[in-house]
Every structure is written in C-alpha cells, then in structure tokens.
Image (tube, rainbow, N blue to C red; front, side):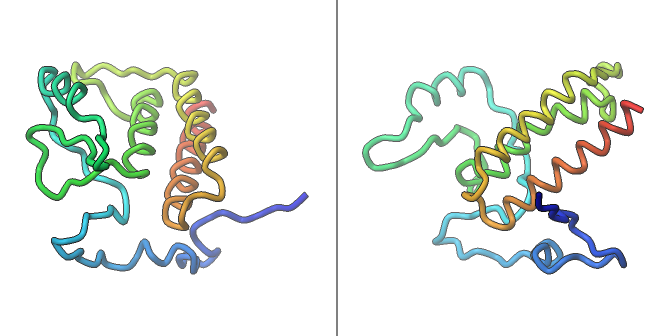
Length: 156
C-alpha cells in the first residue's frame, strides 16, 4: 500500500512545486493560435433553444474537422475544454450542498444528489488517470478534495 499526499500546500502554507502554475500570471496567447484555458473557464452566455436546435443539426464536425460554433458566442471563446467538462459536472454540487440558492430563493439541499455528483467527478478522475496534464489533474483533484470536505462538513 502506498500513501500519496495530494494536498496543494506544504504544512507551512506554501504552494507545492507541482502547483506553482496556479500562482503564475496568465500569458497572453497570440490571436493566430486558438485560445487554451489555463484554468477554470468562464461561463458562456445563454443560447436560445432555436439556436441550439440549429447548432445540433449543422454543428457536428465535418471532414475538415471544424467543430460546433454556437451563434452569439463571443470571439475567442474557443472549443470546450476539460475544464468546461469538470465545471459542468461540479456545478450542481454547491446547489445540492445548500451553498447556493435557487433563483426563487429556496434551498435545494439534497446530500445524496451532492454525493452522486461528487462520485461522478471521481469516475471521471479514474477514467482519465494518466491522460491528463499536471494542471488538469491538479484542478480535478483539488475540486474533488474541496467537494468531499464540504460534503463531510454538511453530513456532520
């Protein structure tokens, strides 16, 4: 049995070497290259149902490898990334833990659903083991750690 410390910080509070990229400023990418998100993504604006239907019909990659482009998407947003996927799977966790309120002001606390979404992130971590870069793996590990700690706090 091997025990590995996966915490981001040393006991004295400094960032471990493999997570130093988190404290470095973002380097601008030249306009000619596609933008790759170095960290958590920003949310895209809402798209109408009609635009989504049109994009679903016409947006599948063709022989040229062109991907889905949604109408009204700001320039430079680029293609979905691993961070987008993880964020999409993690978004309901805060809602189900009761940390975020619904637009109506009500709480949707449901610890079993929170646990389900945390477990889904863990499945993603297991299935992508060895194929993620250091930043992606660190992002997912940190998100899982924080989510599990918050779940345990709520569970009592």
